[in-house]
Length: 342
Ligand code: UDP
Figure 1: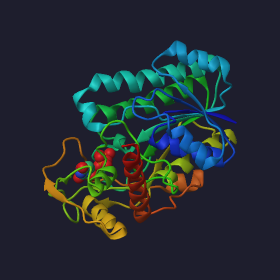
Figure 2 (figure 1 turned 60 degrees about the horizontal axis):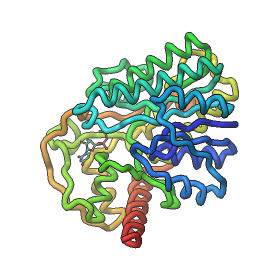
Figure 3 (figure 1 turned 120 degrees about the vertical axis):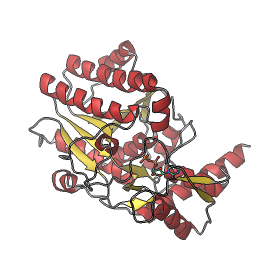
Figure 4 (figure 1 turned 90 degrees about the vertical axis):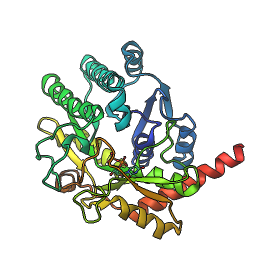
């Protein structure tokens, strides 16, 4: 079964590609390499022992994309390709609205034109905004989007659900909590061109010496130690949920409008707990300081995962220790590779 993976050379896209291949699907990767590197493909091939098909296409270019659909018979799509830096989206909102919305509209438009089926949308727990009730479930009302990035995910879900209803195909939205960690081989991991702003890569970059010191944003939140609470989930668990979603749709088990699933562990951890876990698991001492709150951050969010557990038959298998260990293995690997290139 041919599965189009947009953003296939990116962080979650590359890990999901490995999982698709391992479970007998044929991924076809499309990416414009705006925040990823082509060498990821060789790493995926090394892990899986299979060749990977890749096209450098910008999804905002409808005619290029149309040519692709004319050639390849696509039986499902996982749409990862999007900009995802919350802070950048506040500074450059139109960059985010143009790219994240235009690409989705083009894809869905061509889905309709070519009569295609089975569409998975990358969404985010940021659609819940700041919510007093925790954990959040899929039926929790959406909160105010705290950033243009979060708003592109809210609008994206609406665009997809309206399209599914009008054009009659199957689709679902997967709301990721905080994906982190790397494939156990340390051959792929988070490898963006831009400097990462997410907590786990900031921690590993600080420990390896790429950054002198890291900041903990906010210590006066209403949480056990005053720092924000998030639900950190291993990227390979996120990857397997995508394959479960495709399998569910292709098996014809979906008989309603767009389905939505939270992808988290159900467990919330503070920033300081993540730092302490990293120090314990790796034996590295981290240099960090407490700083003011970061604009756009919500105080706490973690998942009720009951729906994904029961309908997808999916459950996160890895814990926070696995996350920091694999993230650290990957950071060390990157640093060795850079040394050998230098
Ligand atoms: N965070 C931090 N220092 C950093 C990066 C992140 O204290 O250098 C905190 C951030 O304020 C938030 C948590 O770590 O409370 C997770 O942030 P991240 O950017 O990884 O994900 P988000 O939940 O914002 O999508």
